[in-house]
Amino acid sequence: MTHQVTATSNIDFNATGVDEILQNVAFILSTYVISCPLYRDFGPPFQLVKRRNTARLIESIQRFVPQAIVIDVDYLGDAYVGKLEPVVKVIVNE
Image 1: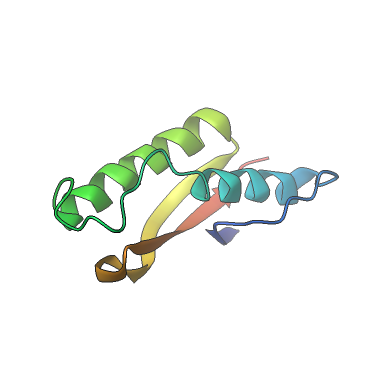
Image 2: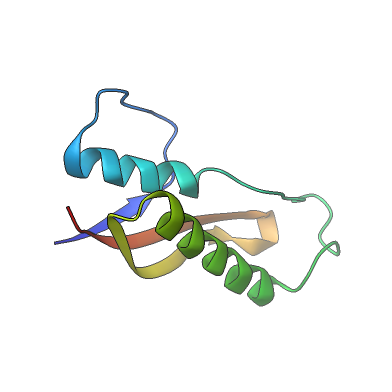
C-alpha cells in the first residue's frame, strides 16, 4: 500500500506499526537543515535546491526509517515566497 506523507507538527508518542513509520517519515520532512527565505539571491538556483533536498530527504528516510520505501517526492508551495513543503509517497515494508 502506498502512503502520501507531508510534514507534521503533531507527534503521537504512542504510535506503533505503520502509523509510527509514517510519523517518522513526516518528522524528517519537517526538519530543515538550513534555510534563508528572505534573501532570495542567496544560495543555489531553485531547481538545484529541489534536487538536493529530494536527495537529502530520500537518504534520511532510508537511513532513519528503513521500513519506508520512497516512491516519489513532490513539493507544494511557492519558491517565490520562500516556502516549499515536501510531499513524499512511501510504501511501508513491515
